[in-house]
Amino acid sequence: MMTGPGNLVRVASSTRRLTSMIESVLTPGERLTATGIGWAAQLRPKVPLVFLGRRQYWFALTDRRMLVFSRRRGGPGPEDLVLGKRYPFFWLEKVHRHRPLFQIRIRGANDSRLVLEFRPGHRGLAAELVARLTRALPPPDGVSGRRAVTPQPATPPASQPTTATEPGTGLDVDTAAAFWGER
Image 1 (cartoon, rainbow, N blue to C red):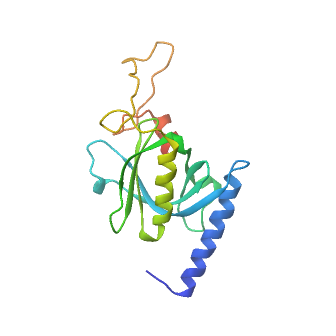
Image 2 (image 1 turned 90 degrees about the vertical axis):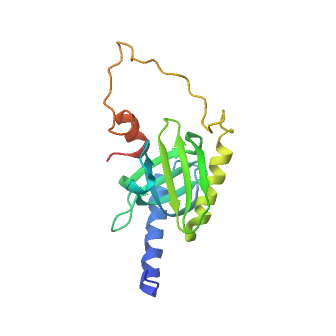
């Protein structure tokens, strides 16, 4: 990894662009509390984490929600917003503070699961996210660590059209896109 002055200028420039871009996405009264870089992947049943395609993302925490932006050359733009959800949408499944990466596993209200990983330099961001998710939700019900979910009917009513599911997840395409973004 380069540690020369040129790299520090690029990092500072990217951080300034990210901060100014995030402020254009914030709602009135919302304030930015932390930013950083981490890896994220959507967990799938019976697929080990090592085989999932993790990608790097810009993370921004506000006093109300978590924002995740795609990383690309030239810095992020408002169109790079991949995920922007309020903290009560998520709850913690597991936290690993091992070295070298701080790993957080979260579950969304739509039952999608994510794994987020942060380098040692961004552990403060990860710790703040864990604290915000812990305060946002009541403790999960049951022994399994999951909230009680009301059972859904096996077949949709005739008035509602059926929707296509995303391969390997069992989620309908619209729900998966709303949670994780278009692929």
